Length: 146
View 1 (cartoon, rainbow, N blue to C red):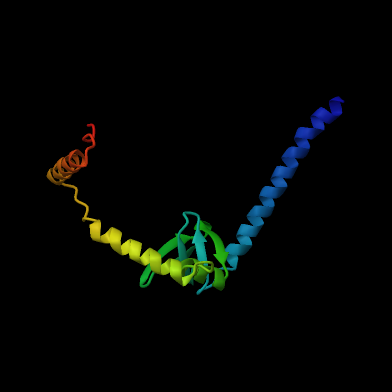
View 2 (spheres, rainbow, N blue to C red):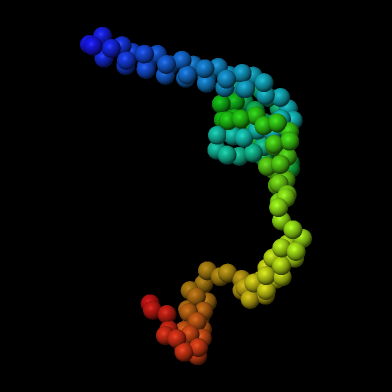
């Protein structure tokens, strides 16, 4: 019984080291397989295209004409071309019908007609609050509490 209690933690530690070593080998293989033109995702969640691979760094194009330098270890995954294209260009909604798209366009137009540009001025916020209170009173409701 005591032997099992001693062996169980040792076996768990050995298994953890094996899985960690396997992950490190996979990461090393992925980093050595980087090539220009491949789509990648960084550890920060940035999607980019590889422009050049150097000794310890990679040059990633994060936007057309914008190239940044990253360490190879910052690359979390190399994506296949179809997956990278779907993420960057968006996936079409397959289950939406043309009718629902037209209805949502009309709703968006109605909302945008009522919308006003945002402002960070205190005067504009106070005016909007007074206007909202006046509208609530006209509709028979109580003004907003402060």
